Image (cartoon, rainbow, N blue to C red; front, top):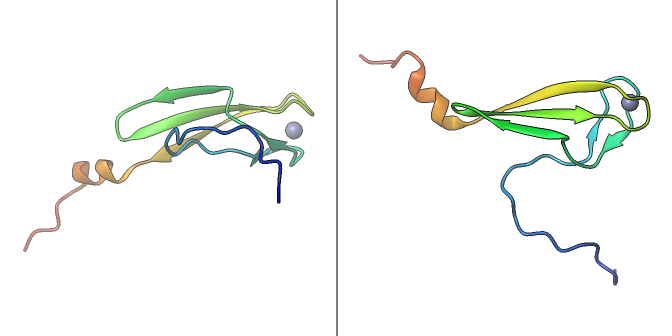
Length: 71
Ligand SMILES: [Zn+2]
């Protein structure tokens, strides 16, 4: 296929085209990104119905905070 869209560098694990939790319309990119400890919060705003919701991505690093399974 010719005509690729905008070239974007890899910005990490930012999710795209997330379906709206209410009406199912795809949202191109999160409205707001808030990094935290071992996790990142994404705020999605649907332009179709105006619904806003938050999604949280958790990284493997947070596994260190869990109880170690030692013998
Ligand atoms: Zn929606």
